[in-house]
Image (cartoon, rainbow, N blue to C red; front, side, top):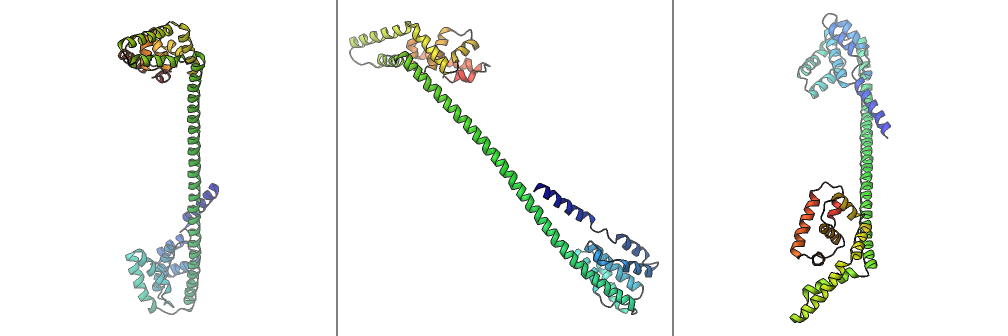
Length: 329
């Protein structure tokens, strides 16, 4: 389709550039001889085959010069059809001087001598003009068809290009959507794996921690009951805090489920305090602020402040794993 478009454009350009060349030299010579040798000028104009002219401007110029040569040779024209060609063309295109000159010649063409040969040649030129007009009509139809073909081809190529571009955009969107879906599925699998590992490895002890801590803060009853319950909860919490195996299992689960998050964190921040490292571990395990406060032996307000400082320190770092670390907050 694109090759066809190039061929049509080439043919159209060739047709446009070749127009107006036939007879131009003959008309120039005839015009130069008009005053010095009008008979030779008329002979040259009779040599022109009007049917072969390539544009209406050349035909109008020939008609004007031919009428002028007849008047200059004092020859009467059988009709005013040829000078009418010039009058019609120059009148429609706004050539005032040529229009007036052709109108004056029209009035003079009937006052000359009758010449049988000149009359025969005149009638021949009228026929040639009719042939030119028919050829011009066909050429206009062909040119209009070529233009329509070029426009149609351009539209088709444009539509195909837009369709190809739209398909590429759709494929890109589908690829991005697929990648996003895979990423979401991987995140969901990691979370599910973390929950599974924590649940299976610690046999629900993290849930017990959250329950005991909530009980400690929310218990109701007499002061004696509260104290007894609080002491019991504290004893369980201290037991869990003293069990290094539980904390080691937390670290292992976080690293397994979060792409070695704590190992990378330790490598990126080797001077980090142990309590901040523990805070990072508990956050990655999704423990509540109350639970973290009790496990670290701090108040909730202190935990909030330490979380804020730790998050700010990670955000200000240039670590390549910064987004991974910030995902636990």
